[in-house]
Image (cartoon, rainbow, N blue to C red):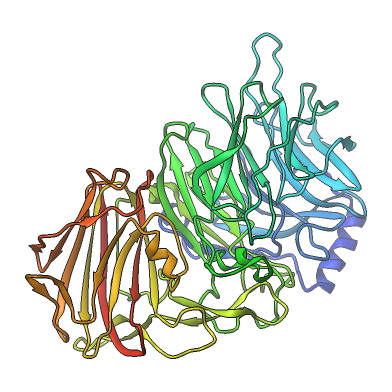
Amino acid sequence: MRDHLKINKILGFVFGMFLCLAGLHPQDLRLPIRPSDVYAPVFLYVPVTNGGSLFTDPEDGIHFFYRIGPGNEGSGSFVYEDVSYDGGESWHLSQLLLDTGKGSRSEITKVNPYSGEIYMMYTRGDGRLTRTQNKRSIWSEEKRLPFHVTFTSGSFIWLREEESTGFHRLLAAVPAEGGVVSYYSDDDGQTWNGPSNLVAAPDFPGRWDNPAGSPQMIELDNGKIWMLTRNSQDHLWECFSDDWGKTWTEPRPSRFVGVFSNVQLQRLPDGRLLIMWLHSMPRTGVTRDGSFHNTARDVLHAAISEDDGRSWIGFREVMLGKRRHELVFSFLPAYDAGIHHQKFTVTRDNKVIVFSGQDDDAIGHESLHRQAVIFDIGWLYERSRSTDFSLGYEDLCVFKLSKERYGVTNYYSRVLGATLIEHPSRPYQKVLQLGREKCDWVFNEQDGACWNFPAGREGRINTRIMLRKNFKGGLISLTHCFYNPSDNEGDAAAMYVFEIPEAGKINVSTTLETGRWYDIKLEWNGCSDEEIHSCRVFIDDVLQPERLRLRNPTGDGLCYLRFRSTAEEEDLSGFLVESIRADIQ
């Protein structure tokens, strides 16, 4: 594509002037380390927009196609690209690609896996389709589509070849009144059939009514098409098609927690499935008028499946909101912001590149919320994780939310809950302190902290804690998804909860004293069957007589450790956490 796409020089000059006026000068950037050395997520750069399409061209690098215009969600006549030809190490930014006409917006771009040509669907009044031809030497004349497309609520895929006809069906899932429908084409997008029956989830009382959106489809090994959609329920919903997208089964909740957040689902060249979504619940007590969904857009997760979606590995945080702990969420209030609108691609070297973050009122590379990261796909297979807080808050969420939205935004002011302080006896080392400080403008004064680890149906947590003088209560819990750190619902919904009462009395034989460090080990043998699964507790390697009961069964394993103060009144002493380690089986 580097040499094949013909770009009009006059348009290039005009567009270059536009970029200069907008402060978006074409430039290059370089990753601080070689992609071959990347393992855990590494920051790459700040993309200039929420919208666009990110994809790997098997023959010609990694491409991010996008537009810039009012609203910063994919509007504008010009499509341009950020491109890397060396696996993500260096990038050429703001390269003009083509002009699709005034009023264009919201393109979705993919490479046809059978022809190698690039297909782009977008909206300009009606839906449009254009594609490259003749080994990408030119872009075709656009075709009208019988549906609209947007990058947040549409997708398309090619199905496997049908032996009797030799064609590869092109299947699109797109927004419709009250949900999502699909259309299909058996002649390479020249004509279309549809729509299918409506795919939608029911309304959730008190929440923004969103029956379906961000549809993602995968053709399974058994020939069925699997669709996931976002909605206002507590999970992504799923449905299936047995007739190549003509009709869909009645939708139902999937295994993936996720409230009104986009989902991205892809099949990798080796057959594995990779999913990215916001595996999180909104803050309880927030109504429709309070933009409940914007209390849950702080962490982005990924999981991988080796058995066509029957089981999943990982459930790991690949990106956290850069401003998730700040009192003022944005210097320039953004109506919509946070870790949302994710897109990802996998390179030929098994590196995953992720672009995510929404920031409606910021065009350019200076966004306070958007970011791009790169990580090795093997990182999702890790079976342990540890922290001693030497990275500060980088791998923690400890914020409290205000009771009201900040200014004109949909988002809530934040303040630190649990805080890092100096270790009481070790110079230059930090420990996490949790207590309760009077603050009448937050939902909950009790401090909380959330820490993610690789998901496991069985495993153990080792942590080291100290109760301080005048400690007034706390707990440690294990959950299967992210809840806001100080949200009591996170502990009510937890699988296992280890409670530490104010007096420190754990059972008849064990009482935790203040001012002393204790090694706590929580070891669970499963989390799906209340009859046979439980969690053993060890304190300084001594097995405690009572096991923690499984409170809320789950099938995909545990992936979050939560610490929280349970003080009923002000507790400026609280308790300390020195270190954490998780090991899963």
